[in-house]
Length: 402
Image 1 (tube, rainbow, N blue to C red):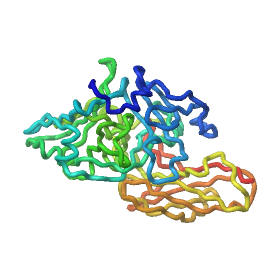
Image 2 (cartoon, rainbow, N blue to C red; image 1 turned 90 degrees about the vertical axis):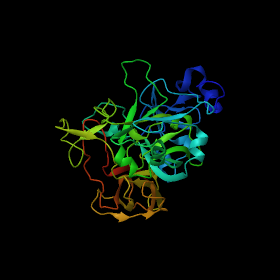
Image 3 (cartoon, rainbow, N blue to C red; image 1 turned 45 degrees about the horizontal axis):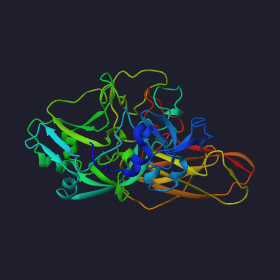
Image 4 (cartoon, one colour; image 1 turned 30 degrees about the horizontal axis):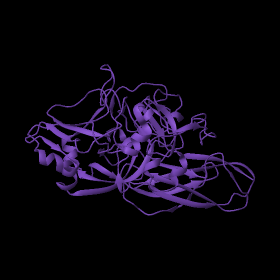
């Protein structure tokens, strides 16, 4: 899409090399104490602050843990995950259209003005988390991007309800799936285009699924999906298709590469198998598991002995809502409740904080666990699957007291 550039700041930094061109020289990672992140540079891409570089083609940029002491993740600090390269770096809103077609009565070509005026705007605060977040901590190790814990973020999203857009197009009898494609496209025909799907019946019963055009009160950053992206609250971000351009209704199940064989988990109650083994059957990944993290102080930090320090972080799950967050400093023998921050909705990060006054010097470990609205929590032993998905173990930070 040529002509006037809607993301001038982005293009000014990216130039002809696209987002692979960094705006500032890489420097040592802030996560040097973390063996998964050690040696990875902090880089600055257009519209972004310094993020941890995993790969540049396609860009995979991780949010530093310091941003998870608050419920809302700033747009400039929000993680980035693409699957194919090259990615879009320019969109002219005068030319951009979202095409809705396939097994419908009235194919649509929606402009941004159409999305904003022909459909009632809806908002939701929801966590976007990569299915492979924390994959670098799996043991035995598994293939795929070796993320630390920062492939996630939480934002207030505003957009049109997907089901209202599909109602406007008119679903034909026999509609089965809805597929979503973005402006990113692989350079070689042997690389499968990134296309995802949801079941028609599910979408029509799920008013919170949005075609979002606003993120934390502003247009989406280019690297987070400008001009519009899918928001599927409570589900892993593999379904949150960015730079959305095509929605297609099918009368057959959609099972191309990124639905099958990719992004699948063992068909077991835990989504796990014995470490090092292969599952007998798999199903598509969907709802996020309960998680909680300690963002401050960061692992490896020094805290004073005998004085009160503040521990802080966030907890979240797949849509039942966080009810309790607890910490332990004795290896999980005893737990005490923390103070929860405001409830921004069942799909959102929930802030937590606690005062902690260690009585002895030397290395100490603090652990955190959360409990959601249906009693799901985190175990002491991490579950395993061959794709490195669904991490929800009790998290910990190692601190030096002195």
